[in-house]
Each structure stands twice: as structure tokens, then as C-alpha cells.
Length: 329
Length: 277
Image 1 (tube, each protein chain N blue to C red):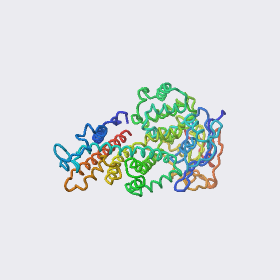
Image 2: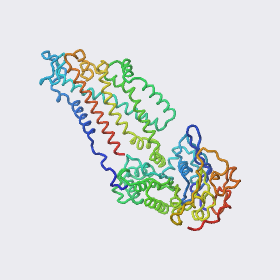
Image 3: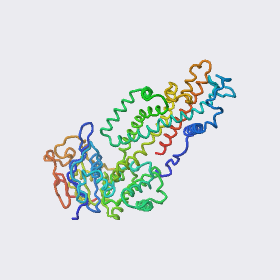
Image 4: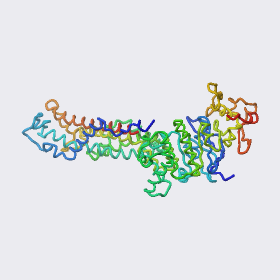
């Protein structure tokens, strides 16, 4: 296997509120290879966004991050602010869920792209202007040159997310962190944005961590998936493997509740109960209380990572009890 | 939502802004060129027309030395506008800067600033300023210093609160995620987004400064005779209130109009900034 671009070991992220600690990310490990699109899926509050923000060092005190974040083999966790600034934006860029609020409302889109270029490249002012038009063109904004002087409020949601991507791409980052980039958009636009990210990843040989709670998006665009539940990655596998034979009861539940290949007007299976709240003390598997396959061994001790196939990891101690393969839809 | 449904008229002028700026523009012209606007020399005595009521010759009447009230009010515009600007410019800049930095970095400086705000807010503003002038001595320069020493706190408080809101928004995280340094994030991204309420409050504060300057002028702590200043003009007439009301009433109206102008302009600016979002 080629060398990994990003390796995360034992990442723990805690927030503090009213003197109580909440563990958002509870000791996770994962890797991202060059050019790979990794899907990070899970429910709201499962720690997906906190993971991305931890990688970029965007968690501010009293929040706390522990663990090792190896970027091209170098630990960037706890790096001095000035050194971290050279990684942020230049090598790892991030786009956000809501393009309404992630663009600066008082600067034109052109200004914001040129600023990103000025911060990370040695281009002259006229080169920056030309490159800004190229970037808007690259992300598929029609009549790019004429839209540079528009303010974000003059753009529709989809175009705004494209502009956000253009700003993130300015410094040609090797890794793009996409935090639910399609959640705030119309379904038709969602598809366009996902296709755009896929195309850019391929064209620019850029890796992507795509955070989403939409399994359809994952199936369509990712190479590998990590499923998060209650702050832990409960299963990691290549997309095809995960969708064919999930080896964690939670993943299985998620896949079975997808409305794909079902006859209309039949009830959709769902996972009963609700995920544990942050701050709840857990003994055993976090999913045990909702699990249809739960056994006695699930109720005690912290689940350990198990290898159940090629590049396929799970925390589930009852993996063997799950159906060997899902019927293809 | 398509682009066409977005309100594209953020810069359409509204009546408050038009009236406000009209009043302020007239004031500015008067302040710059009083000799062309005022019918008489504001310091010329005329013992043949002392305490004359309003007439065609003296539209606002004359005072006990026969000086033309209208001319004195017009000349006073220069002093009062100076008070409005000079006593607030320093506090706006210093207060905004301190508040912005404290809001962004927080920590111990935040605690210090908040206690300082508490202390200043506890005192009545006028009493605090009078106290400082009592130490420095009366006069316009000391008036500016006294107001400046107290007033910056309010801008610091406002800027801090605005920055606290702005730095939690996604675009601020995005700016950090893009690897921008603190200086760039603070001054190019956060401050321009936070400046609206500060400018609006500045407008109001200039009106307050005129009121304060007039109050101190009335008490003899601000502009010194023979300088014409609205508060001092009102003080001139206080002994003749029953017999020559025009000496006090017209400068009073001038203060009201000026305050009105600043308030309208402030409202208009606030409205304009709101619609730009």
C-alpha cells in the first residue's frame, strides 16, 4: 500500500460546557491515502464535524484535542500557530455545510478568492485576477469573469457552495475536508456538488474527507467509508464491501433503513431508540441498547478494533452473527 | 431560490438617511463658512438694540449686549460640530481597537475590560466628565480629553460584543481553516462585519456629545466666552427667561435639530447596513 497522506491515531476531542466535559470524539483511528475519497458517515452529534475541526486545529479552548494527527508523516497536532497556518488552506482546506454563512458577507467573491491566493501563492495581482476567473470556471460557475465582483448574497445556494470550493482550491490543497457540503442544498444541486467534488478530486489528484449523513452520497462518490457512532468509528471498509456485507450491527441497521429497492407504501425498517447523549457514561458497546443482535459480551468493556477482512475493520463483537451478505437491491 | 429573487436594491436611499444627511450637510456648511451665512458679526455689541425681540432685522432677536442671536447660533455650529467630532473620534478608534482585540483573544484582558466597563457605567457620565474637568480645568481641549477618557469604554464594550458574535460564525472558522493569520482575520474579516453597529452608535454618540458639550457650556466648564456655543448661549439667557425667552429658546432648538440630524443619519446608516446583509 502506498504511503498515507493523513494518519489519525487515538484522536480524542472534548468540549466543556458548564464545567462538564463532553467527549465529541472518543479515540478514533483512520487514514486517508493520496487521491482517496473517504466518506465519514454518522448521525448528528456522532462526532463527524468535530473530527474535521480537530484535524485543522480549529477546536478552541476550553475544548481539548488529544492524539496524533500525522500529515505526510509529521504530527501537526499541537503545532505552533504560525506553522499550523502554513498547513491550513495551503495543504488541507475545508468547506462548510452552510454556504450562506461560510462566505464573508462584506467581501465580493472575487476578493475572497484573490485573498486566498495572496495568502498562499506568490502570484502577482494580475495573475491572481486571472487565476480567480480560472477557479470559478473550474468549479462550473457560468460567466465566471462577470461574477467576480458579486457579493455572496447575490449568489444562489449552489453557486455559493461552488464559490466556497473555489476559495478552498485556490492554494491547490492535497486534502479537502468537506463538512456536509450538500446538506443545506436542494436535492438536484446536491448531486451537482458531489459530482463536482468527485471530478475535482480526480482532476487535481486531491484527497477528500466527505462528511455526510447521506448513505446515497457515500455509495455514489466515496472509495472508502468510516461509520461513526457516539464519537467512535464503528466500522471502516471499502464502499462496495461495506454496502454488501456490513460487519457492524449499526451499519447494518443504517443500510436496511435506506428506501432503495423497496416497493412503495411498505413500512421502512428503522433503528429503535436514540443514540446516547454526550456525557452519558457508557459501559460496553455504545450501540448495545438499540441493537437487535446484542449479546452478553456487548454490555461490558470497551469494544476493541477487529479486522474482519481486507481493509475492513469493525468494533462489533457480534460481527459473525450478522447476515453474511445483504441482498443486492 | 434564484438570483433574481434577491433584493438587489441595498443602496436605495431612505427618507431618514436623506433628512439626516441634509441636516448634517447644512450644519457642516454653516460650520465651515459662518461668515457667509450669518447676517451679523456674532460678537458686535449694539446698545441701541439690547434684548430686542425677534423682528425682520433680527430674526431670533438680540441678547443683553445687542448681539444678534441668529448669528451667534450659526457661529456656534462650528464649535458644537467640533465638539461632536473631536470628542468622539478618539474614543471610536481606541475603543473599537481595544474591544476588537479583547473580543478576539479574550482571556485576562477580557476580565479587566469588563470590570472597567462596570465601573464606568456605574458612574453617571456627566458627573464623571465634570470630575475630570475639575482636575484638568475648564476649556474645550480639556472637554475633549475628559469625554475621551470615559467614552472609549462604550465603544470597546460594543466592539467586543460584536466580535464575540462574528468570530463564532462559519466564515470566521473558514478564514482560520484557510490558514489566515490573526491580523488578517481580525481586520479584514471580522471587523468589517462588526463595524455597522459601531458606526451607528458613533452617530448617536456625536449627538450625545453635543448635548454633553452644551451642558458643560451651560455650566461654564466647556467653551469659554466670548466663544459662541449653544449651551453657553442658553446660559446667557437664563437671567432673562421671563422677559427675553428668545435668548434661550432658539439655541435650544438648534441643539434639538442637530441631535435630530445625527439620530436620523444614524438610523439611516443602520438601515443601510442591515439591508446589505
